[in-house]
Length: 264
Image (cartoon, rainbow, N blue to C red; front, side, top):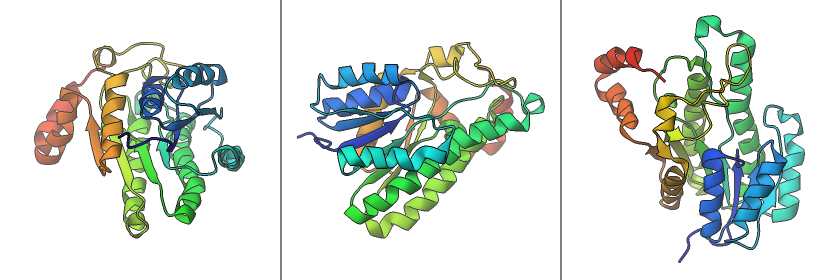
């Protein structure tokens, strides 16, 4: 029996990478995906593939760097779907620049997209879940939300912020039976480094070695879906790099020694 059959699953950042693979994974489970990202053309391509596995899939393009029109986005989705069973906050952008070289404007851009837009969307969707007395919130964070990392100051800060917000939200929703799952992927083979923002505000346009050798986005997505299905509170997804989370927790002196030697 497919756990997510006919569930409305809204995925942000669904045009590529982990978000795209989540769309396929849920479609294969018989879920009805709602796909959101900036690039409508790519979303339509993802939709075509999803419809091979499920009879319903919707596309709602949106630029999450501007939250001023987000209430209209949510109303539009609900007009079509009537409800949202699962919200997966996946949209975001990484960074490749040292703090000393990065203007505050870039830090704000990263925080606005990675943190505030996800919080804004969650706050708009949550009342409908509470009214229906059902739902599941998921946020795709990062292992850099667990520890600091060179050339990722604002990115890591945004993921730490997500961790704090959604951990706190989880405690508030226990009595409402709405689970919150925080996913922290490590190095996943996606275009995240290519699209990362530099100190000049331009795409990094380079594939990091660690990223190129990382876990496939498809495998990552399948593990995320499994974690959601088990209502897990947290999920670390990756290979050996996720051990840094435990090193940071249990052997901080070793972490502080190792982290300065990390390269992309």
